[in-house]
Image 1 (cartoon, rainbow, N blue to C red):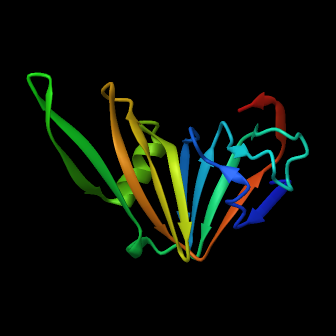
Image 2 (cartoon, rainbow, N blue to C red):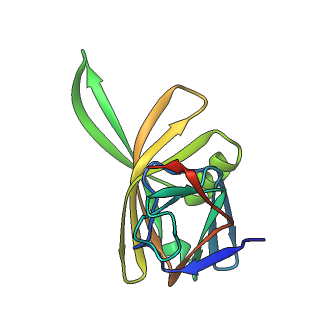
Image 3 (cartoon, rainbow, N blue to C red):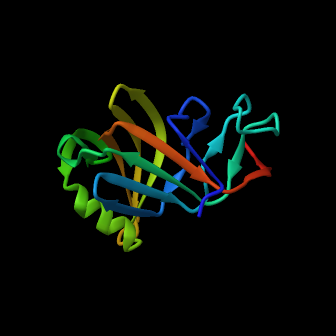
Length: 159
């Protein structure tokens, strides 16, 4: 299905401003579908354009995914008379997150990503469709490797 699939190429790929439109969890793999693709950095060995450009529709597979060790937190700001009073953090069941994304009720947009041994940390925003509402999120994914899949690089879609 995919022309290109590379493992652990996160130093060549940026997910900044990329949106998750679909989620599938099976066996020990978590797959995120990005209809609008991800960014292939200019200095990537997979990018011959010389500039940071988008891919077409893509998929990220977290292989040997451990759901028990992975978590997503939503942050909600609370205001009184226009002044922020506090921010609360709520742990959300991952299966609920998958369901809401697949139904089109939520979109996950990545802002930052950090990688370490067996862990990936993402920060971003969840946009909800029911209400005009946005929450910040923090997600930790525990896996052995990450596979990035895409078909084409789009030279006309520059950073």
